[in-house]
Length: 179
Image (tube, rainbow, N blue to C red; front, side):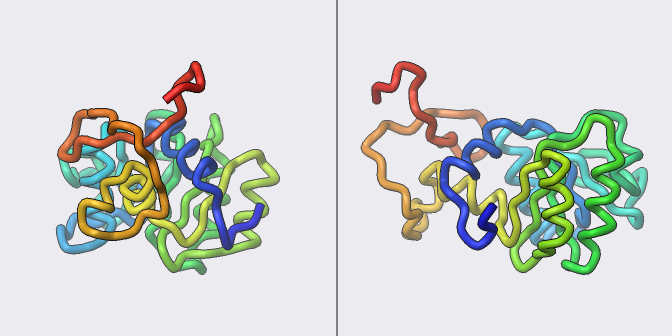
């Protein structure tokens, strides 16, 4: 996998296939990026579980916080890492010890660890590095264009209305192949 450039279909497929996201490095501080990414993903209908040993047992955005991935009582589809790159190998090892394994390890902007990514991929886990699921969702759904940002996605398709604080959902191809 080329982790320098991701195909839109790869990112979109991930964002459509996951439901439960563990945010490692979640913060209760509302000005921290992990806080507003959590809020955005919750608004899109994802089940988001904060992981932060310093906040264990306390809610962040109404979601109970856990100390580590192994403490989460439900299956995790995606692990979103808001920690420095040198913390990634330990988090990936934690994820590899889960049963069932998560489908995705996602490393936030500026977070990259190629050896840990290779280890996760060898176990059948998809990996995204140096990207933000909030930004990617907004880009692929067209929402980011509301702010005048070029999303790189052109479509004449009418947006799909979804619940949440934004109304556009991820664009998908219709099952019959017609737009």
